[in-house]
Length: 344
Ligand SMILES: *Cc1c(COP(=O)(O)O)cnc(C)c1O
Image 1 (cartoon, rainbow, N blue to C red):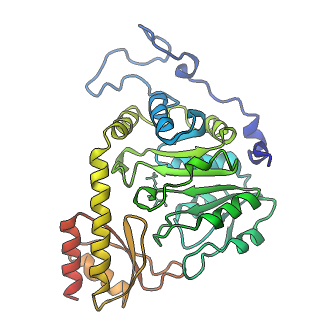
Image 2: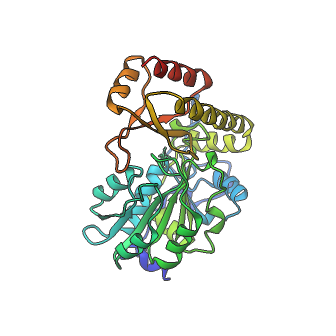
Image 3: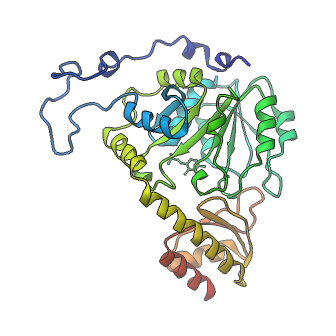
């Protein structure tokens, strides 16, 4: 397939803004090229950040087995998605396909950018309906958003279904792997060269515990990534976020420990919840949250609120009747949650 044809023509031809730090790379003694203030201040942020996040991308590339040119780093993965949509979608013409119930940002982004939205629901078992997706797409369907493990349902989408989409659709297939570090599957990044239309989204916000830094990555075909780099703001990821994300990658022992604790708490919470009379079903989870069907979601939601415990009521989502989405907390938080639910 012709990947370049997926890019909006005026973006393909766009001459990007060229910042001072784009024009001169490498070390120098004296920088008088960016109108910065030369006097260092306590946080050492008197200089503009690296516009292409070289150090962070080098480390990500090494860990993921890809080239830096196959990585886009965004101010959170939300920015990566926004830049992708702005790079690809012609307003009032192109279409984005989503599979509800899923992450709400895809719809919001599509609406902001005046993309048509094709909705092909997951089955009642939250499985991908590949045949229905293939029937629904048109020549204007430019992006298919899949979320695996899916938010709010927690399950992985099957490899064979996704492979079938990748081979048969002429759209970009974006797999949102925000929760992949909690899953029993290593993810899709290793296959981006096999499928030129495959893009994989990851983030520092969940397993890495750095939601406040706002750093997210989109991995994929270098033609798309390079077009996205023209569209993004020149200094989109700030200096402190770049440093802290890089540091997290090189000192990941604590992260691993936290993920293991969340995984064992997921087991404990699943078992304990299933034994409660107010709980109808706990869906299997490959993520750091549980989708829990209860007897009366809005009542239990309010009662938990009144005890100072906030969960997410997802009852209004397709196929999620009477469902709460509960994030796995610390062992103490989970114990408190269980004891409040037992009292109901
Ligand atoms: C939390 C989440 C993200 C992460 O967004 P950031 O902007 O990187 O914090 C992305 N996708 C899904 C499905 C999520 O639940």
